[in-house]
Image (cartoon, rainbow, N blue to C red; front, side, top):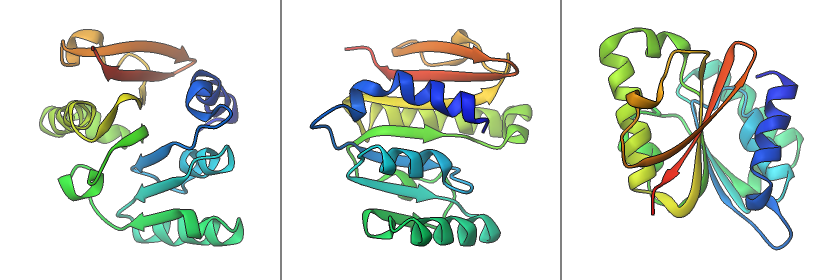
Length: 167
């Protein structure tokens, strides 16, 4: 993810990382872990990274160890679309960066969006935020469950959706 996009995301997430806040973070499709690691560096109490790719997982583990963050993190080598990956909650911040090909095929796209909805309705804390990273224009408001609160920010060819509960 581009540094400017990551910085814009964390500017939007400032209330969750303010003084006295120690959010619990879930980073799905974590890759190298850049978002979850940034969250830990900004004061997150704990981050669970879910990445099933062997090479990416090894890189992520190395990043956590080299930054001395492994004691506040858990790396789960699992499918980010599975229920085991997101339990137990509550999660204050969830990063969700599915591989773009998953959004291109109708069946996997449905699974990606259904998982997002299930997390927001389930293990996401009532005042938590779910950050969905997609290619520009690949997801529209009507694609999301109508009971979710959604805000879209576009950065070049990247869309960032901020989702939460409509309560």
